[in-house]
Image 1 (cartoon, helix red, strand yellow):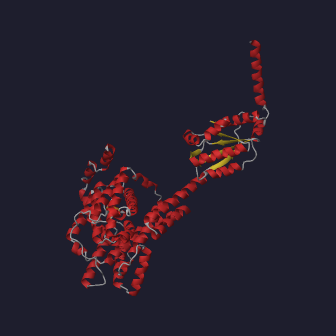
Image 2 (cartoon, one colour):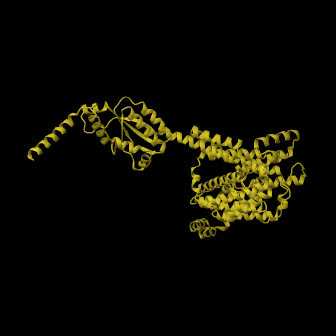
Image 3 (cartoon, rainbow, N blue to C red):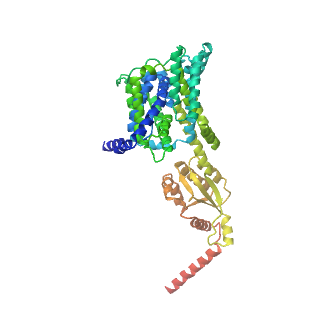
Length: 577
């Protein structure tokens, strides 16, 4: 318990965080206000897209945004509802209803806290860049397709597959077209995309939404369906949604939500670090903060939250330097919830669809995708496969597929780097005649790279084709790693060659590789034959001695001279005795 307590203490905010918030409060407050203006339509839109309503998006932005700002591991991270999380939540709503989403969020929050306690944050660095780019592209496509029903002004069709829902919405629009909604969505999206390119510092999303709302109200356009009534304030915290009997069936979705929250939040924090100088997030503390945020948000009717890359980028670009900016963002949204709910409720759904369509388009970094696709065929394959899986299946399966394929391709690349090369025998102190005679019966191979399961069997096939020699010397000083499969294949190779009358000798086995060779019985097999040596010259001398003892080679001239001297010395000693 003491160790867990110490770990929890390390994850809590410290005095340094408070001191940093006091350095430039005016700048941070201004940044927080800007982010809140940008975040308002996104929170509303993602709340609607999730199926729980705009009020759920606002509650998430306020509660999760505040808690993640205080307890998270990044000074600049802005958290709230995101498009990636919405993609995962839609099928959960369809299958388990709103209460299922709230339960999943609570369970995912507990899982994130557990991940923080076991220091799992550092493993984010092992996610390959093509997987990240692929699922970002897939998410952008899914977010865009999810807005089609609202952008077309038709009721959202039944179904949890975005392609199916989109097709049904198009059919419904063909039968009952609503060009007013289409116009609102396209104009809002165009204003955001063009305006941001011309004046990046102006929050065109809120400008476009306000203008669309005013036009809809002044013109009395019934076809521009508004969000609907919003509660004037946050609901009281409650666990009434929790159904203990459903926890088992919700475990898998909760794991998916926790995995996505961890991945997207740590990715967003890394992006924030890259946009600044001197900022570095704590990945475990970030998981802890996101866990607390996701535990609390469902209590107030909010959906699961993550770090939001787009809002975090706005926070950094507007000069934020501490957590105060993220806290100010949550506070401004809370004021809007309590003071401006009647006005917010009049925003046309089509306008929010336009905001999210523009957001989806801006998520796609064409230059980055082009560079990644041109890097290697493997990177291009991983990127496309992850994006297609995100669109056809879901995000978590897509990431798993991307990681598996990336791992398999990486193993293949490593295995291809491993080589088995025949090398000439070291000359040593042999004459040309002696060296030529030894080379007729001894062959040496050098193993370069890893001797593991993906490459070991190829070595076995190559060694099995060795011509009729009496001794094979395996030079292993350049072997980078050996696993159990590699050791077993090496043992099998030695035994096969021994059955053909070929003695296998090794040289240069590294100390760190001896344990696996010992456990697999390789060293024991070599010791029986006296065939393990520290260096290649020693192995060659051992091979020569073996050939002489078996009568394959006569005593070489140098050896005969040394033998004669030894015999003469021994005879002199006997005479003296």
